[in-house]
Every structure is written in C-alpha cells, then in structure tokens.
Image (cartoon, rainbow, N blue to C red; front, side):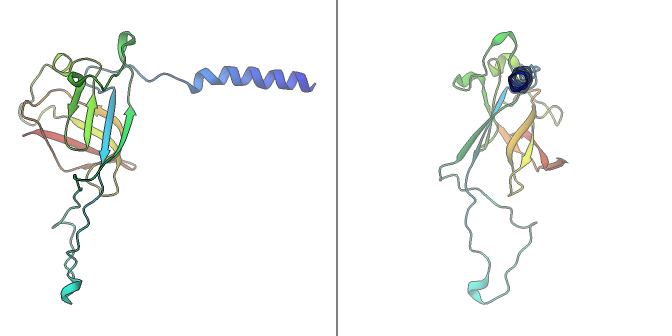
Length: 176
C-alpha cells in the first residue's frame, strides 16, 4: 500500500512539474522581453528646518525624493516574455537595449531599430512601463509589462507616474 501511494505521489509530481515550469508568453512586437531596474539609494537631505529651531516645511508637492546616482545601484532583471523562433532575450547585445532613464533599461528580441522602426511624434504611442511602485513613488521596483510603439532619437524623459491598479503604477516616457 505504501509503495502504491509513493508511486502515485511521484506520478503526480511529474505531472505537476511541467505546469509549474510553464513558458513565458511569446512577445509581441511592442513588448520588451526583459527589463533591468537599477535602483539607487535615495539622497539623504537634511533640509527639515529643525536645526534652525523653526518648524520644518514639508509638502510632497514641493520636493520629490531623488536618487543618489553616484552610488552603486541594486540591479534586478525581470523576464517578461519569450522571443519567437527560439531566440534568446540577450541583454549583452547593446543594439537590443533601450535605456529609458537612469533606472529602467528594456531589452528586445531583435535590434531596437528593426523591431521599433517608428519615431515617436506628439503624445501618441509613448513608451510605457508598468510595475510595482518603488517606495519613493517615483519609479518601479519591479516590472510586469511594457509597451513601446516607437523610439525617440534624442532619448527619453520620464513623465509623472500614474496609478495602474493594486500596487502597480504606470510610467510613460516622452521624447526629450
């Protein structure tokens, strides 16, 4: 009886294993296959006003947290989807990378110029990154989805984050 239960549990484990190792969905043309996030420490600023004896001024509308880009970042990479034709999502090939700002870099299945041949014009089709909000609220700490329809020849400027749902925010980028 024990041998039969053991065989059943092994068989069940073998059936469940392929399900748990499910492949990522295949990337569409506008999706990055992976995203790298470089999170820098926040700048420590003692502008509280307490040293002067005055009550400190504090309003989130006046000062947003900024990152100390001189420090070493904590880097995380997120696989978002799989490339078709068994290609690899190789971030070591620089032509496949699209750096949106000092924090977010996206990697595509092909050369960015081939995969995204259109240049951004106006406010339509701006690159968007969706993910879990960083505690600062200024960027993402984890990426769950991307949509990039066009590229900007002079680089990108991050726009104000928008609430997306749950703990996620959406960050759009406009051309510089």
